[in-house]
Amino acid sequence: MRGVAVLGATGSIGQSTLDVMQRHPERYHAVVVSANRSVDDMASICRIHKPTHAVMGEPESASALRDRLVDLPQVAVSAGADALDELLALPDIDTVVAGIVGFAGLRPTLSAARAGKTILLANKEALVSAGALFMDTVKRGGATLLPVDSEHNAMHQCLPIDALGRPDMTNVEKIILTASGGPFRGRARESLHSVTPDEACAHPNWSMGAKISVDSATLANKGLELAEACWLFARTPDQIEIVVHPQSIVHSMIRYQDGSVLAQLGQPDMRTPIAYGLAWPERIDAGVEPLDIVAAHRLDFEAPDLDAFPCLALAQWAISQPGGMCAFSAANEVAVAAFLQGEIRFTDIDQVIDLTLKQVELSEPASLDAVQALDETAREVAQSHATRLAAAHGK
Ligand code: NAD
Ligand code: MG
Image 1: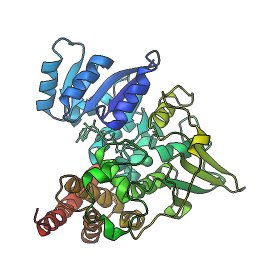
Image 2: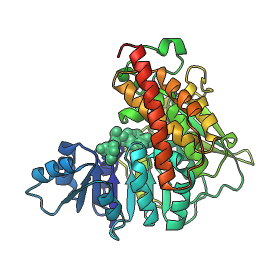
Image 3: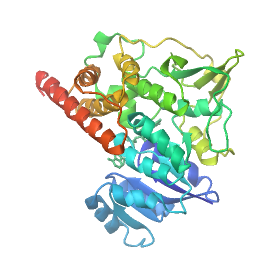
Image 4: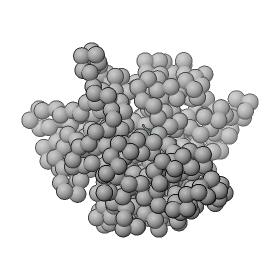
Protein backbone atom coordinates (compact mmCIF):
# COMPACT_ATOMS: atom_id res chain seq x y z
CA MET A 1 0.00 0.00 0.00
CA ARG A 2 1.50 3.33 -1.07
CA GLY A 3 0.69 6.47 0.90
CA VAL A 4 0.01 9.39 -1.41
CA ALA A 5 -0.17 13.16 -0.82
CA VAL A 6 -2.33 14.84 -3.46
CA LEU A 7 -1.50 18.55 -3.60
CA GLY A 8 -4.14 20.55 -5.45
CA ALA A 9 -6.64 17.72 -4.90
CA THR A 10 -9.65 19.78 -6.08
CA GLY A 11 -8.03 20.70 -9.41
CA SER A 12 -7.97 18.95 -12.75
CA ILE A 13 -4.74 17.01 -12.00
CA GLY A 14 -5.86 16.28 -8.42
CA GLN A 15 -9.21 14.89 -9.58
CA SER A 16 -7.60 12.72 -12.26
CA THR A 17 -5.12 11.40 -9.67
CA LEU A 18 -7.86 10.53 -7.18
CA ASP A 19 -9.82 8.84 -9.98
CA VAL A 20 -6.86 6.55 -10.80
CA MET A 21 -6.20 5.86 -7.11
CA GLN A 22 -9.84 4.95 -6.53
CA ARG A 23 -9.53 2.23 -9.20
CA HIS A 24 -6.77 0.59 -7.11
CA PRO A 25 -7.76 0.88 -3.45
CA GLU A 26 -5.49 -2.07 -2.60
CA ARG A 27 -2.44 -0.14 -3.90
CA TYR A 28 -2.97 3.53 -2.98
CA HIS A 29 -4.23 5.45 0.02
CA ALA A 30 -4.56 9.25 0.22
CA VAL A 31 -2.68 10.28 3.39
CA VAL A 32 -2.76 14.04 2.68
CA VAL A 33 -5.00 16.05 0.36
CA SER A 34 -4.59 19.80 -0.10
CA ALA A 35 -6.47 22.62 -1.80
CA ASN A 36 -6.60 26.37 -1.63
CA ARG A 37 -10.18 27.52 -0.86
CA SER A 38 -12.70 25.06 -2.36
CA VAL A 39 -14.30 23.84 0.86
CA ASP A 40 -17.26 22.02 -0.77
CA ASP A 41 -15.06 20.03 -3.15
CA MET A 42 -12.62 19.23 -0.37
CA ALA A 43 -15.43 17.99 1.89
CA SER A 44 -16.59 15.53 -0.81
CA ILE A 45 -13.01 14.37 -1.39
CA CYS A 46 -12.57 13.73 2.34
CA ARG A 47 -15.81 11.73 2.49
CA ILE A 48 -14.79 9.52 -0.43
CA HIS A 49 -11.05 9.09 0.20
CA LYS A 50 -10.88 9.41 4.00
CA PRO A 51 -7.39 10.95 4.10
CA THR A 52 -5.53 11.28 7.40
CA HIS A 53 -4.94 15.00 6.76
CA ALA A 54 -6.68 17.71 4.76
CA VAL A 55 -4.81 20.99 4.34
CA MET A 56 -6.42 24.23 3.13
CA GLY A 57 -4.62 27.34 1.90
CA GLU A 58 -5.88 29.55 4.72
CA PRO A 59 -7.36 29.24 8.27
CA GLU A 60 -10.89 30.44 7.32
CA SER A 61 -11.28 27.68 4.73
CA ALA A 62 -9.84 25.12 7.15
CA SER A 63 -12.31 26.12 9.82
CA ALA A 64 -15.20 25.92 7.32
CA LEU A 65 -14.00 22.45 6.27
CA ARG A 66 -13.74 21.32 9.91
CA ASP A 67 -17.39 22.38 10.42
CA ARG A 68 -18.39 20.30 7.40
CA LEU A 69 -16.55 17.21 8.68
CA VAL A 70 -17.68 17.03 12.31
CA ASP A 71 -18.87 13.47 11.72
CA LEU A 72 -15.46 12.49 10.28
CA PRO A 73 -13.07 13.15 13.19
CA GLN A 74 -10.40 10.85 11.71
CA VAL A 75 -9.59 13.55 9.12
CA ALA A 76 -7.28 16.14 10.73
CA VAL A 77 -7.82 19.54 9.09
CA SER A 78 -5.08 22.18 9.04
CA ALA A 79 -4.12 25.28 7.08
CA GLY A 80 -1.14 26.93 5.45
CA ALA A 81 2.22 26.20 3.91
CA ASP A 82 4.00 25.44 7.20
CA ALA A 83 1.49 22.73 8.11
CA LEU A 84 1.83 21.19 4.66
CA ASP A 85 5.66 21.28 4.81
CA GLU A 86 5.61 19.32 8.04
CA LEU A 87 3.08 16.74 6.86
CA LEU A 88 4.95 16.01 3.63
CA ALA A 89 7.84 14.59 5.67
CA LEU A 90 5.55 11.95 7.28
CA PRO A 91 7.04 8.47 6.89
CA ASP A 92 3.74 6.99 5.67
CA ILE A 93 3.85 9.19 2.56
CA ASP A 94 5.73 7.59 -0.36
CA THR A 95 4.41 9.66 -3.26
CA VAL A 96 3.61 13.36 -3.56
CA VAL A 97 1.53 14.52 -6.53
CA ALA A 98 2.50 18.15 -7.23
CA GLY A 99 -0.81 19.36 -8.69
CA ILE A 100 -0.97 22.92 -7.33
CA VAL A 101 -1.08 25.52 -10.10
CA GLY A 102 1.61 28.20 -10.34
CA PHE A 103 4.41 29.45 -8.12
CA ALA A 104 2.40 28.59 -4.98
CA GLY A 105 3.34 24.95 -5.60
CA LEU A 106 7.08 25.53 -5.29
CA ARG A 107 7.45 25.41 -1.51
CA PRO A 108 5.58 22.14 -0.85
CA THR A 109 7.25 20.47 -3.84
CA LEU A 110 10.67 21.42 -2.47
CA SER A 111 9.64 20.02 0.93
CA ALA A 112 8.71 16.72 -0.73
CA ALA A 113 12.07 16.70 -2.52
CA ARG A 114 13.95 17.39 0.71
CA ALA A 115 12.08 14.52 2.38
CA GLY A 116 13.21 12.16 -0.43
CA LYS A 117 9.71 11.30 -1.66
CA THR A 118 8.66 10.15 -5.11
CA ILE A 119 7.36 13.34 -6.76
CA LEU A 120 4.84 13.18 -9.59
CA LEU A 121 5.44 16.60 -11.09
CA ALA A 122 2.55 18.36 -12.82
CA ASN A 123 3.33 21.83 -11.41
CA LYS A 124 5.80 22.94 -14.12
CA GLU A 125 5.87 26.56 -12.87
CA ALA A 126 7.69 25.42 -9.70
CA LEU A 127 10.43 23.74 -11.72
CA VAL A 128 10.94 26.51 -14.27
CA SER A 129 10.99 29.28 -11.64
CA ALA A 130 13.63 27.59 -9.53
CA GLY A 131 15.24 25.07 -11.89
CA ALA A 132 18.76 24.84 -10.43
CA LEU A 133 17.55 24.93 -6.81
CA PHE A 134 14.76 22.44 -7.54
CA MET A 135 16.98 19.86 -9.29
CA ASP A 136 19.65 20.24 -6.60
CA THR A 137 17.08 19.68 -3.83
CA VAL A 138 15.81 16.53 -5.57
CA LYS A 139 19.37 15.20 -5.83
CA ARG A 140 20.36 16.01 -2.25
CA GLY A 141 17.09 14.67 -0.85
CA GLY A 142 17.44 11.41 -2.82
CA ALA A 143 13.95 12.02 -4.23
CA THR A 144 12.55 10.33 -7.34
CA LEU A 145 11.20 12.81 -9.86
CA LEU A 146 8.64 11.49 -12.34
CA PRO A 147 7.16 13.95 -14.85
CA VAL A 148 3.38 13.93 -15.19
CA ASP A 149 3.13 16.73 -17.76
CA SER A 150 2.05 14.61 -20.74
CA GLU A 151 4.93 15.59 -23.05
CA HIS A 152 7.65 15.05 -20.44
CA ASN A 153 5.98 11.86 -19.34
CA ALA A 154 6.12 10.69 -22.97
CA MET A 155 9.85 11.51 -23.10
CA HIS A 156 10.39 9.60 -19.85
CA GLN A 157 8.58 6.60 -21.34
CA CYS A 158 10.85 6.68 -24.44
CA LEU A 159 14.17 6.82 -22.52
CA PRO A 160 16.21 4.28 -20.53
CA ILE A 161 15.52 5.05 -16.85
CA ASP A 162 17.57 4.10 -13.74
CA ALA A 163 16.25 2.91 -10.37
CA LEU A 164 15.79 6.50 -9.12
CA GLY A 165 13.72 7.44 -12.17
CA ARG A 166 16.60 9.33 -13.82
CA PRO A 167 16.88 9.26 -17.63
CA ASP A 168 20.01 8.13 -19.48
CA MET A 169 20.56 10.68 -22.27
CA THR A 170 23.49 8.86 -23.95
CA ASN A 171 22.92 8.62 -27.72
CA VAL A 172 19.95 10.97 -27.66
CA GLU A 173 20.24 13.40 -30.55
CA LYS A 174 17.09 15.43 -30.13
CA ILE A 175 13.95 15.69 -28.04
CA ILE A 176 10.87 16.47 -30.11
CA LEU A 177 8.37 18.32 -27.92
CA THR A 178 4.86 18.32 -29.36
CA ALA A 179 2.29 21.10 -28.92
CA SER A 180 -1.41 20.99 -29.76
CA GLY A 181 -1.33 24.61 -30.99
CA GLY A 182 -4.32 25.41 -28.74
CA PRO A 183 -7.76 26.71 -29.75
CA PHE A 184 -6.39 29.55 -31.93
CA ARG A 185 -3.97 27.53 -34.07
CA GLY A 186 -3.82 28.88 -37.61
CA ARG A 187 -5.19 32.31 -36.71
CA ALA A 188 -3.40 35.59 -37.42
CA ARG A 189 -2.40 37.77 -34.48
CA GLU A 190 -4.73 40.61 -35.59
CA SER A 191 -7.69 38.29 -35.15
CA LEU A 192 -6.77 37.49 -31.53
CA HIS A 193 -7.22 40.92 -29.89
CA SER A 194 -10.86 40.36 -29.01
CA VAL A 195 -10.94 36.65 -28.06
CA THR A 196 -12.65 35.97 -24.72
CA PRO A 197 -11.49 33.93 -21.70
CA ASP A 198 -14.15 31.32 -22.53
CA GLU A 199 -12.81 30.95 -26.07
CA ALA A 200 -9.23 30.74 -24.78
CA CYS A 201 -10.18 28.07 -22.23
CA ALA A 202 -12.00 25.89 -24.80
CA HIS A 203 -9.07 23.61 -25.59
CA PRO A 204 -9.74 21.37 -28.59
CA ASN A 205 -8.30 18.18 -27.01
CA TRP A 206 -7.62 18.54 -23.29
CA SER A 207 -9.84 19.44 -20.34
CA MET A 208 -7.65 21.38 -17.87
CA GLY A 209 -7.65 24.18 -15.30
CA ALA A 210 -8.17 27.76 -16.54
CA LYS A 211 -4.58 28.95 -16.20
CA ILE A 212 -2.93 26.16 -18.20
CA SER A 213 -5.73 26.37 -20.78
CA VAL A 214 -4.88 30.04 -21.43
CA ASP A 215 -1.16 29.12 -21.45
CA SER A 216 -1.92 26.55 -24.16
CA ALA A 217 -3.78 29.17 -26.20
CA THR A 218 -0.88 31.68 -26.03
CA LEU A 219 1.81 28.94 -26.38
CA ALA A 220 3.33 30.23 -23.10
CA ASN A 221 2.71 26.65 -21.96
CA LYS A 222 5.12 25.36 -24.60
CA GLY A 223 7.70 27.91 -23.43
CA LEU A 224 7.31 26.67 -19.84
CA GLU A 225 7.54 23.09 -21.11
CA LEU A 226 10.68 23.82 -23.09
CA ALA A 227 12.34 25.01 -19.88
CA GLU A 228 10.84 22.06 -18.01
CA ALA A 229 12.36 19.62 -20.52
CA CYS A 230 15.76 21.35 -20.29
CA TRP A 231 15.83 20.79 -16.51
CA LEU A 232 14.33 17.30 -16.44
CA PHE A 233 16.49 15.90 -19.24
CA ALA A 234 19.65 18.08 -18.90
CA ARG A 235 19.27 19.60 -22.38
CA THR A 236 19.89 23.01 -23.89
CA PRO A 237 17.02 24.58 -25.89
CA ASP A 238 18.79 23.88 -29.21
CA GLN A 239 18.62 20.14 -28.40
CA ILE A 240 14.82 20.33 -28.31
CA GLU A 241 12.61 20.82 -31.36
CA ILE A 242 9.04 22.05 -30.93
CA VAL A 243 6.43 20.80 -33.39
CA VAL A 244 2.71 21.49 -33.46
CA HIS A 245 0.66 18.30 -33.60
CA PRO A 246 -3.03 19.28 -33.50
CA GLN A 247 -4.42 15.81 -32.73
CA SER A 248 -2.54 15.50 -29.36
CA ILE A 249 -2.04 11.76 -29.85
CA VAL A 250 1.77 11.71 -30.10
CA HIS A 251 2.74 13.21 -26.74
CA SER A 252 6.44 13.74 -27.63
CA MET A 253 9.35 11.90 -29.25
CA ILE A 254 13.03 11.08 -28.74
CA ARG A 255 15.34 10.94 -31.75
CA TYR A 256 18.46 8.80 -31.22
CA GLN A 257 21.82 9.03 -33.00
CA ASP A 258 21.09 5.93 -35.08
CA GLY A 259 18.07 7.68 -36.63
CA SER A 260 15.44 5.86 -34.55
CA VAL A 261 12.60 8.04 -33.29
CA LEU A 262 10.63 6.68 -30.32
CA ALA A 263 7.24 8.21 -29.60
CA GLN A 264 4.61 7.67 -26.93
CA LEU A 265 1.03 7.75 -28.19
CA GLY A 266 -2.21 7.80 -26.27
CA GLN A 267 -5.53 9.50 -25.70
CA PRO A 268 -5.32 13.09 -24.47
CA ASP A 269 -6.23 12.02 -20.93
CA MET A 270 -3.99 12.93 -18.00
CA ARG A 271 -4.91 9.71 -16.20
CA THR A 272 -2.39 7.90 -18.45
CA PRO A 273 0.71 9.85 -17.34
CA ILE A 274 -0.60 9.96 -13.75
CA ALA A 275 -1.09 6.16 -13.68
CA TYR A 276 2.41 5.74 -15.15
CA GLY A 277 3.82 7.89 -12.34
CA LEU A 278 1.81 6.18 -9.60
CA ALA A 279 2.73 2.64 -10.68
CA TRP A 280 6.23 3.19 -12.12
CA PRO A 281 8.11 0.96 -12.93
CA GLU A 282 4.96 -1.17 -13.19
CA ARG A 283 1.80 -0.36 -15.18
CA ILE A 284 -1.81 -0.21 -13.99
CA ASP A 285 -5.24 0.38 -15.50
CA ALA A 286 -5.90 4.12 -15.72
CA GLY A 287 -9.55 3.99 -16.79
CA VAL A 288 -8.59 5.55 -20.13
CA GLU A 289 -10.38 4.64 -23.38
CA PRO A 290 -8.09 2.56 -25.61
CA LEU A 291 -6.60 4.55 -28.48
CA ASP A 292 -8.31 3.66 -31.77
CA ILE A 293 -5.54 4.51 -34.23
CA VAL A 294 -7.74 3.87 -37.27
CA ALA A 295 -10.39 6.25 -35.97
CA ALA A 296 -7.63 8.80 -35.31
CA HIS A 297 -7.12 8.57 -39.08
CA ARG A 298 -4.19 10.97 -39.45
CA LEU A 299 -1.40 12.59 -37.49
CA ASP A 300 -0.30 16.07 -38.64
CA PHE A 301 2.83 18.00 -37.72
CA GLU A 302 3.71 21.63 -38.45
CA ALA A 303 6.05 24.38 -37.21
CA PRO A 304 4.77 26.74 -34.46
CA ASP A 305 3.76 30.27 -35.54
CA LEU A 306 5.94 32.52 -33.38
CA ASP A 307 4.54 35.73 -34.94
CA ALA A 308 0.96 34.98 -33.94
CA PHE A 309 2.04 33.54 -30.55
CA PRO A 310 5.07 35.55 -29.33
CA CYS A 311 4.99 34.04 -25.82
CA LEU A 312 6.95 31.05 -27.10
CA ALA A 313 9.68 33.25 -28.61
CA LEU A 314 9.83 35.25 -25.36
CA ALA A 315 10.32 32.03 -23.38
CA GLN A 316 13.02 30.86 -25.78
CA TRP A 317 14.87 34.10 -25.06
CA ALA A 318 14.19 34.02 -21.30
CA ILE A 319 15.57 30.48 -20.94
CA SER A 320 19.02 31.76 -21.90
CA GLN A 321 18.95 34.51 -19.23
CA PRO A 322 19.79 33.84 -15.56
CA GLY A 323 16.50 33.94 -13.65
CA GLY A 324 14.71 34.66 -16.94
CA MET A 325 12.10 31.92 -16.64
CA CYS A 326 11.32 32.87 -13.03
CA ALA A 327 10.42 36.37 -14.25
CA PHE A 328 8.66 34.99 -17.35
CA SER A 329 6.49 32.64 -15.30
CA ALA A 330 5.62 35.28 -12.68
CA ALA A 331 4.68 37.86 -15.35
CA ASN A 332 2.65 35.23 -17.20
CA GLU A 333 0.70 34.31 -14.04
CA VAL A 334 -0.16 37.96 -13.42
CA ALA A 335 -1.13 38.57 -17.06
CA VAL A 336 -3.25 35.41 -17.33
CA ALA A 337 -5.10 36.30 -14.10
CA ALA A 338 -5.80 39.81 -15.48
CA PHE A 339 -7.01 38.33 -18.79
CA LEU A 340 -9.29 35.82 -17.02
CA GLN A 341 -10.72 38.75 -14.98
CA GLY A 342 -11.59 40.52 -18.24
CA GLU A 343 -9.14 43.36 -17.48
CA ILE A 344 -6.64 42.95 -20.32
CA ARG A 345 -6.79 41.51 -23.84
CA PHE A 346 -5.47 38.13 -24.92
CA THR A 347 -2.75 39.85 -26.96
CA ASP A 348 -1.74 41.94 -23.92
CA ILE A 349 -0.45 38.80 -22.20
CA ASP A 350 2.74 38.67 -24.27
CA GLN A 351 3.10 42.47 -23.95
CA VAL A 352 3.08 42.22 -20.15
CA ILE A 353 5.68 39.43 -20.23
CA ASP A 354 7.88 41.26 -22.74
CA LEU A 355 7.84 44.55 -20.80
CA THR A 356 8.49 42.73 -17.51
CA LEU A 357 11.47 40.81 -18.91
CA LYS A 358 12.93 44.09 -20.21
CA GLN A 359 12.43 45.95 -16.93
CA VAL A 360 13.36 43.45 -14.22
CA GLU A 361 17.03 43.11 -13.35
CA LEU A 362 17.68 39.42 -13.95
CA SER A 363 20.10 37.24 -11.98
CA GLU A 364 20.27 33.54 -11.11
CA PRO A 365 18.43 33.02 -7.79
CA ALA A 366 20.52 30.65 -5.66
CA SER A 367 18.18 30.25 -2.67
CA LEU A 368 14.44 29.92 -2.11
CA ASP A 369 14.45 33.47 -0.67
CA ALA A 370 16.11 34.78 -3.84
CA VAL A 371 13.58 32.93 -6.05
CA GLN A 372 10.72 34.38 -4.00
CA ALA A 373 12.21 37.89 -4.22
CA LEU A 374 12.65 37.70 -8.00
CA ASP A 375 9.13 36.27 -8.40
CA GLU A 376 7.71 39.11 -6.28
CA THR A 377 9.58 41.84 -8.16
CA ALA A 378 8.49 40.44 -11.53
CA ARG A 379 4.87 40.25 -10.29
CA GLU A 380 4.92 43.90 -9.18
CA VAL A 381 6.33 45.06 -12.52
CA ALA A 382 3.90 42.85 -14.48
CA GLN A 383 0.96 44.10 -12.39
CA SER A 384 1.87 47.74 -13.11
CA HIS A 385 1.84 47.02 -16.87
CA ALA A 386 -1.39 45.02 -16.65
CA THR A 387 -3.07 47.85 -14.69
CA ARG A 388 -1.90 50.45 -17.24
CA LEU A 389 -3.14 48.33 -20.18
CA ALA A 390 -6.46 47.71 -18.43
CA ALA A 391 -6.89 51.47 -17.88
CA ALA A 392 -6.10 52.08 -21.56
CA HIS A 393 -8.98 49.70 -22.41
CA GLY A 394 -11.25 51.61 -19.98
CA LYS A 395 -11.26 48.76 -17.39
P1 NAD B 1 -6.51 23.67 -11.47
O1 NAD B 1 -6.71 25.14 -11.49
O2 NAD B 1 -7.57 22.79 -12.00
O3 NAD B 1 -6.21 23.21 -9.96
C1 NAD B 1 -5.30 23.87 -9.16
C2 NAD B 1 -5.24 23.28 -7.76
O4 NAD B 1 -4.27 24.01 -7.01
C3 NAD B 1 -6.57 23.39 -6.99
O5 NAD B 1 -6.73 22.25 -6.18
C4 NAD B 1 -6.36 24.61 -6.10
O6 NAD B 1 -7.12 24.57 -4.90
C5 NAD B 1 -4.87 24.52 -5.81
N1 NAD B 1 -4.28 25.83 -5.54
C6 NAD B 1 -4.36 26.93 -6.34
N2 NAD B 1 -3.70 27.97 -5.77
C7 NAD B 1 -3.21 27.52 -4.60
C8 NAD B 1 -2.47 28.12 -3.54
N3 NAD B 1 -2.12 29.41 -3.58
N4 NAD B 1 -2.11 27.34 -2.49
C9 NAD B 1 -2.48 26.05 -2.43
N5 NAD B 1 -3.20 25.43 -3.39
C10 NAD B 1 -3.56 26.15 -4.46
O7 NAD B 1 -5.11 23.40 -12.20
P2 NAD B 1 -4.66 22.10 -13.04
O8 NAD B 1 -5.12 22.23 -14.43
O9 NAD B 1 -4.98 20.87 -12.26
O10 NAD B 1 -3.09 22.31 -13.07
C11 NAD B 1 -2.26 22.05 -11.95
C12 NAD B 1 -0.80 22.07 -12.38
O11 NAD B 1 -0.58 20.98 -13.28
C13 NAD B 1 -0.41 23.33 -13.18
O12 NAD B 1 0.89 23.69 -12.84
C14 NAD B 1 -0.50 22.90 -14.63
O13 NAD B 1 0.39 23.61 -15.46
C15 NAD B 1 -0.06 21.44 -14.51
N6 NAD B 1 -0.59 20.59 -15.59
C16 NAD B 1 -1.93 20.40 -15.71
C17 NAD B 1 -2.43 19.60 -16.72
C18 NAD B 1 -3.92 19.37 -16.86
O14 NAD B 1 -4.33 18.57 -17.70
N7 NAD B 1 -4.76 19.99 -16.08
C19 NAD B 1 -1.56 19.02 -17.65
C20 NAD B 1 -0.19 19.22 -17.49
C21 NAD B 1 0.30 20.00 -16.45
MG1 MG C 1 1.90 19.48 -21.23
